[in-house]
Amino acid sequence: MLDRLDISLRANHVLFVILFTAAFVFGVMASMTGDRFYLRLATEALILSGLALSIDILLGFTGLLSLGQALFFGVGAYVSALVLREVPSFWLALGAASGASLVAGVVGGLIANRVRGVYFALITFGMAQIVAKIIYNTRSLGASDGLIGIPVVEIPLGFVTLSAGNPLEFFLVVLGGITLIYAGMSYVLSSPFGRVMIALKANEKRVPYLGYSTWAPRMVAYVLAAVIAGTVGGLYPMLRGFVSPELMFFSASGDALIMVIIGGSGTLVGAIWGAILLVAFKSVVGSWTEHHLIIVGLMFMAAVLFMKRGLIGLVKPMIERRLVRIEAAREMRKEGKAP
Amino acid sequence: MPDIMDYLQFILAPQMLNGLALGISVVLVALGLTIIFGLLDVINMSHGEFYAVGAFTALALSALGLNYWVLLALVPILLLPVGVLVERYLIRRVYDGGDRHVSTLLLTFGLALVIEDILKIIFGPNTHRPATPLPGATEILGVFIPTYRLALIGIGFVVIAAVALVVYRTRLGAMVRAASYDRNMAASLGVRVGWVYSGAYAFGIALAGLAGVLLAPIYSVFPTMGHDFILLAVTVVIVGGMGSIWGAVVAGISLTQVQAISALIISPVWGDAIIFGVMVVVLMFRPQGIFGRIGHA
Image 1 (tube, rainbow over the protein chains, first blue to last red):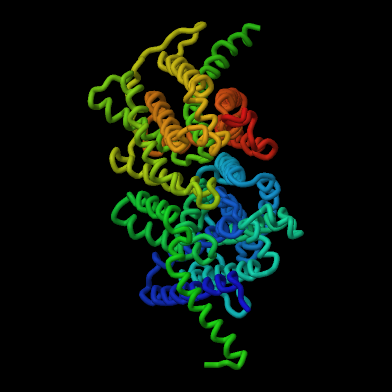
Image 2 (cartoon, rainbow over the protein chains, first blue to last red):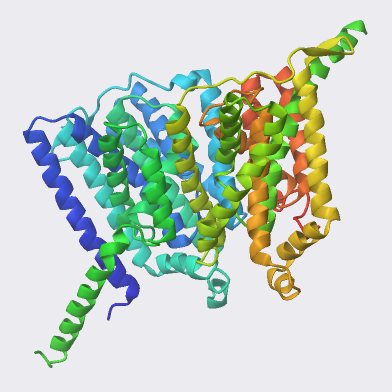
């Protein structure tokens, strides 16, 4: 028998499969028409969707609002850039980015998880500001100019070697990475431990009554989110060839938060859809007016006021109802009362 | 010894006085923020944008020929109805839907984006530099200080004292503190809590607008002028204790002094990092800040 969370996660899977298929078709079509710009833009949207997804793990499932998630994205991006400038190895750079963000996540988690609610939001914000300012003022890290001249890397996948310089190949690598992250997080959330994480959002005071620690799942959620943000951050310099302190500024964290809220928090897949929509919207509207912020702001406010589940919330209930019906029919067949 | 005296007189003292002018301005912005948080439990992310709205309104009205000192009173009054409308029709809608802190923070964050772009549409992205209403400099102990900065410090102190007087010594202030302490009890004693909420939000916005008018002649006026300033104000509110008026005053003045004096010792670019470092440390060990909150202290 499936419970509500299973149904909800399965509905997410349906929406993710649609997204994956659409992205795949888009990638193939774009490369057939010889496009580079939109493929690069879509790759960036997917990379940012990883950052948005990490915010959703905290906000949508564990109930923690992080206003400084770009900190870990930036740590991943800088570490990856520094490694790539010395040794142009894809796996080494990505591993270093993940490792560094793991360490940063543990340190940040120990600091931020001392407090709750709005204080948690402000402390994450403060930490990101401090690190951004330090990098901004450190000459050996490129200061305000950032680091440039990051070489194009080869991506050995065992059976085939792709290149980050080829727009389609790198797009597919990032798409694969996001799929792995999505699948991994879905698995974690459906596990018993993941359910404790979700319970924290529902009612943190009750969780200890059931015999669970509240600190451990909160910490694990925070570190997982940090590692995801850092890992996708590690992909960023491979795409753009440079990193800059702006990656860590509040505007970056704020943009990712907008993606989550407009797409729909608490769904994982909503963050990814939100990232793609926001990047596409900024590129389309940005080409004929520079005043896209007002529309984004209004959409964001509308989502907070009227659509608690974001744009995903408009279609997800329908998919859930359908899944419930399919499941009920299967139960009936199993019991021999087949229609 | 004369070296040290010269240092004190010509370097440290002016630096501290400039720091005080900044501190007073930050306290003015932080006062509104702390009152709104203390009473409504709302982190007003759009506060910096209302500060910019105040500065731009003053700019537009002074182009119509209005006197600066009239604007100082007029702009906050113009912002009052805006604050009431925002509280009534936007913020109030998300009070009771789950986590109030998060939903109101997100809503005002969205509002900030909208206001910023509206300012860009009306006034363009460029920087404006209004004329100083009090040109010239005044000599104090052999150092020349711009007269307007001295006036700013004076006006700022008067406004802060007036706000504290209203909140702590009037019937209206007692109603505000009562509503903050126990909303239901205050309501049952005949306090119109709904109006107190709208009024407090509007009052906070008006203070931000006032700060905008006061600071426009010193710092330039541009649509994103609220960004940098609001970070400092948020830090002041946290360190002082969210909802505490005296906390905001003490934290605002001491933090800007730390920033001003540290700028003499190490490179001034590290000032921001130091300020945020203080904020994180305070949040870690004393999240309620140095002082309690409105009504609770």
